[in-house]
Length: 512
Ligand SMILES: NC(=O)c1ccc[n+]([C@@H]2O[C@H](COP(=O)([O-])OP(=O)(O)OC[C@H]3O[C@@H](n4cnc5c(N)ncnc54)[C@H](OP(=O)(O)O)[C@@H]3O)[C@@H](O)[C@H]2O)c1
Image 1 (tube, protein in one colour):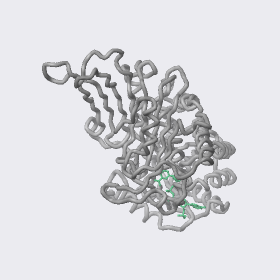
Image 2: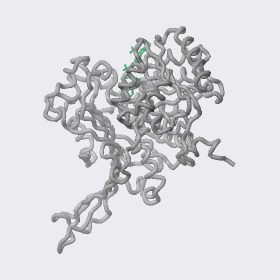
Image 3: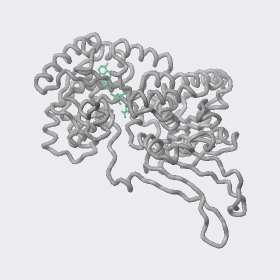
Image 4: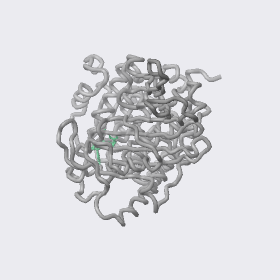
């Protein structure tokens, strides 16, 4: 019989989540992510007594920096639990240390290995390691290879070695496959934690609870009742000084291939047989594999790219994308993308899935909107017209996290005039408590050995297979192109071509 003691997943479900003693090494510890997210999240976990006794964090990066001091400032500024409790900080800081070193220098790994051995002795971390690779992607292979060569990867589960890899996991199918091969030459799949912080968001996990803990929605969750699905991830910000990075990436790589396809997979997957890492990911990967290949020579009938031009953000004049520092003035990199997809399987056959993501949109919003088929016969008149207005279920990921259901209701008065109204669930008001940060959940899950909310290798490759074909189609289209990509004014909902993509199907984008 399984007991909670030997089943970390069961412990997790019951809220008894306390990992075994371990040390976490953060490669890239002088960087932005460590400062803004990782160490603040670990401090918050410490404040909630969720970290194991003796927990240690070792930072590593090229520059020599006053790590403990900088992390104090980072926690003071970014942790969810503020102000800093000085006694708690003292205890947390006692586990912090830093080793300067270049990621291609074998001597740096020898120093790290000796340092970790000392930590095992002093803090009782028992050889258990989490290596967090929070560096630019060019260093991923160096770090994994050197960890392997230095003998720092445990072959078995006791002690454990787990490696968290940040995005981007490759920039197309070929590079993702090569990176995956490198990972698997040193690590077993169950030691690899490819992080997608969207999966750490409460509202994203709630897609599973909403679908599989309630009996009333699942019978409707298919092509008999659903007319179309729209996934939107809109950002009001531009590229925030990351011009040279963004111009090589673009919205498809930066947002769609990872975060949005994870949302898509959770929305569309079949019920897993258990809430276990492989059972859940088996179902997600089937969705990604069922995405219909887009025709290369007609790619622009199925996809729309756009670039923001000059405009306004909250009343402030902002430059167009091609005028941003670090961006080529003749750039063909998209800051907006819209796709029409089909999932060719029994459940979703024939239901169009519209996906859009963009920068410099009128507001920041991420949502999945499911539009149901209209009633078969319009019986009632609305404002003199027969009403066909469909029900819409919107899962709002951020901000104003929650779920709304739009339906028609009788307007008070002597006529049977139906008007749309919404039923509204909001996390904030229903639960009161502030949700944990995505990184808190994911870091803790990794320490517990629970990879359910991390992306498996075959998922990443299936998603890249689809996206790489889109990139190939675009490259072919660009050979014929005269002039820039479709432009949209900053602060608007994207180029007119995106509206046309849906108008051809007799539909329109939602205004979230
Ligand atoms: N920042 C975010 O909000 C965010 C969000 C999601 C994902 N990510 C991903 O997280 C990763 C880290 O992002 P970041 O924003 O923290 O990057 P960053 O601010 O540029 O930091 C990069 C870190 O890597 C170190 N580094 C780079 N090359 C090195 C080398 N050859 N040897 C030793 N150290 C080296 C840097 O050390 P030095 O300072 O000493 O040069 C620095 O600590 C990236 O993969 C990014 O895509 C970031």
